[in-house]
Structures are given as C-alpha cells and as structure tokens.
Length: 189
Image (cartoon, rainbow, N blue to C red; front, side, top):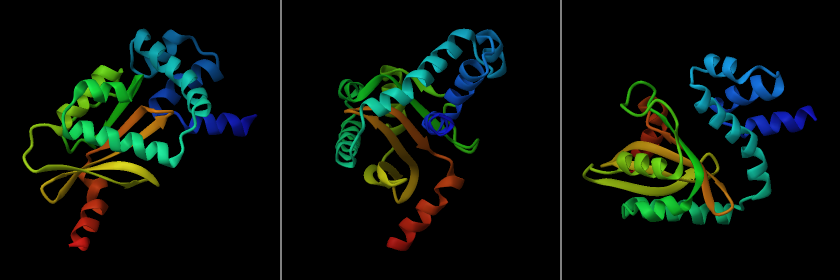
C-alpha cells in the first residue's frame, strides 16, 4: 500500500502534492490547507481535485512511446502553425502548464490550468520572435520539444500524455538549467 501511494504521489506536480497530502492523507481542513499553500480555497479545491484524478487517469490511459511521440509531434506542428483551436483539441480539458524561468527569465510564476488558457500561454511563449524554431528531441527519455531562438536553446518542453491528450506541460526557460542543452548544441556544430 505505501509503495503504491509513493508511486501515485510521484506522478503529481509539487503543487498537486501540496494540496493532496495534507487533505487526503492527514485529514486537514481544506481552508487550512489553502492558507498553507498560499491559495484561495477555490484554487486549492481545483488542485486537490486534479491530484485525486491524476494518477487514476494516467493508469487508465497508458501511453506507449509511439503514441506519446505522435501527440508531441502534433503539438509541435500546431505551435509552429500557431493554430489555437487545434492545440486546444490536443490538450485535456484540465491540462496544466508549468513555466520554470528560475527568476532569470520573465515568465508566469504560477501554473496555468485549463486547455484554452494553456493554449494562450504556450502560443504567447512561442510567438513573436524571429528565427524561432521548434524541434522534437528526446527530453527525459521521451519525445519533447526544444525551442531555439537562432542557435540558442531558449526552452525545453516536456509533455505528459494520457491517451491521445496532453495533461501536463513543463516548460523550462531558466538559462542555468539550459546550459547543458546549449553546450551540447555548440559541440554538435
């Protein structure tokens, strides 16, 4: 039982774990937990609901590497063509995107929830820069998206896919965390 719980918790984002554990594991009152995690009670309720739903969703709809690759490549293509309706259709209704700028890159500091809001955030991140290219590459052992502005890796995006929909997106923009990617790109030349 404890191993299954640890594995389920490992699938959650840090924010989802912060909402799930005090409430569901320790039985703390939702209002108290919301105050501890610095959110309104409504925001907390949404996080906790996602946390309860997330592990079962992923287990109910396992994704093969081929399915994952197909969905990520489709996301890349609609981001390149800036097709918001198609991008929204590739996202789960309760999809979430997390941006990691590390305080060094101006970006949203809180997760963005909901397919339409995630679509707007992603297209805003990727739009408006000359010489922006998106490439599918291995990111953490699965297909992800590497964003380059010119020759510089500006973002590495990994996606969690359940069935044929993206449920979570992790966009790393922190230049310190991208050093390895940029060194590797320089060595390839």
